[in-house]
Image (cartoon, rainbow, N blue to C red; front, side, top):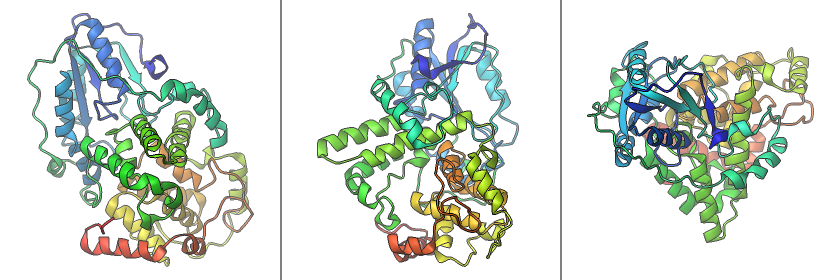
Length: 454
């Protein structure tokens, strides 16, 4: 556990504190939560109960009905599961901007110790200052981020380090047990996803047509992947119409399930049913944790300055190359390009809040090709993901966006606009995937608001 724990200050334990406080910002689960386990260990050591406070505020400029509803859909189940282990649980919903501070101050004022989630922020988070002893605990990665002591620039460089450490960390976490139950009456819950309507957020981005939030939904999604998709994953993972990907990225991002749980479940299922799961585990562990490593060590995750020197050199060399067509951010956002496949990927983002991974590569590459400058392309991609994607504002998302510019990739044959950065063509998509089936599926979803049978 010690590799996961980071002490945030030099303050002492508050001797007259009434509880240990777990300030839950990312990992919305009882199961496989190292931050919760560490908080429970402190509570037991101090002979105190544990209070969990989960805030949801309006501060993020991209806060919207989609993301608020996804969080709110999980609150009742989260409260029930914390109640079963004897922890107190308070969901702190701020209805207006700049309202969240008093909840934090009040909760911390009675805490003996504070524990929160250690997460590499892709956007500027709240500046939390704890007047008592405080810790941040990494429960997002299987191999703790601190174990990789410098930035890795490609999968091949981080892979052996992760594989060497996996036997130590790819182990299930024991259930949390508390010596003292939290007996104070808890605050009322906010009343489900409809509560988002009363919040000072963007109401023009509706809830997803495909995904509902919460721990139970995350478990159902994992079960579906194991039973219906894993066997086909290796062969069909790049075929959106086949529906074999896990669809777990929104649940991983919002912390309703952990990558550790998923990896253990996949490994066990694959062993029992003689299924090869290596490609999925590569994506879940090595590629995902490469992105977390990038965000942890990069100075500015939304900047082309973080790209390798060869990428910046080749993009600058081709900066003045003609672009035809060139689209504005508004045209991209409204799916108004000349390419019906690209428009369908953008419609999927608008409706579902997620784009299939292989087509998201194409989506991003075309934004690079059709934007006036690389900087404008990057800003457009970040804006669209931050506003609409349920797995947006995530280290994995930022890694994938910058991959479209050459991050974690290698040089390819030189061509206009891209230089030696990898290019993707519509012809390649037509040859390799069932484009017509995908476009028809998204058109049906747009027309009816319903998913085709998968």
